[in-house]
Amino acid sequence: MPALSSSLLEPVFVQFAELWPERPEFDPTHPLGCHRRHIPNRVVFEHVIAALVHGSGYEVIATAGCSDRTIRRRLHLWAAAGLGEQIHALALDAYDRMIGLDLADVSADGAITKAPCGGDRAGRSPVDRGKGSMKRSTGVDGYGIPLGIVSATANRHDAPLLRDTFEACSSQLRHCWPEQITAHLDRGYDSKRSRDLLNELGFNADIARKGMPAPIQAGKRWVVERTNAWMNDFGKIRRCTDHNAKIIDFYLYLAAAIVTIRQLIQRARTLYR
Image (tube, rainbow, N blue to C red; front, side, top):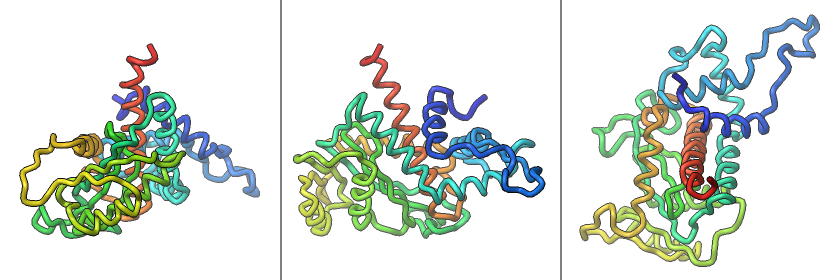
């Protein structure tokens, strides 16, 4: 059984293949012309998707046609080239053209997941007895489509990551923000620092107050909680075992691209029958 349905895998890989063209099977510069055979990108990409979905180690998902070392080498190349961010930007552009991003209302929130193997994004979790964990701060539109993601250690507070989160959202969008934007945030952002930042960006602030009951359905910020749940469906994000920050960001943006394409397909069914 495939890790991802073909309706999701094919659109992602088509864009990936345009960004990272296939190399010849054998290196033409080799003096004997018979060096190590190049494993096709499609084969390695399917193994990476299996690692993302199931969260398995590379030794577990490796096969006779693609070793774990090949997966690691190709991952480092793809992450260093920023392919995850580029695929996500293309998915956002397609969604915006066919459905339309709701940028009048945006939300942001942090989510803590496990990082038991340490690494660049592992820190002591404040909610899990100090175990190694990772935090990601996600910015979404009014429907919950992920616009930008920032990864950090679990002991970082949400509010200092807000600027980086909105900057990541801006870098992924192909156009400018609209004139009127309302940022919906939970009580963790209820501070002068957050309000000054929103004023600087020109955003209206809708922030839950500390000390007052505010259920998750209040306002329009519940969509970011749903997006965090969508992202946590991927095993590699739910339990991060990679050390390199660029590889972690590659997986985060690849998962965000898959979430965006899935919502595009579901919402397009009623609009483009």
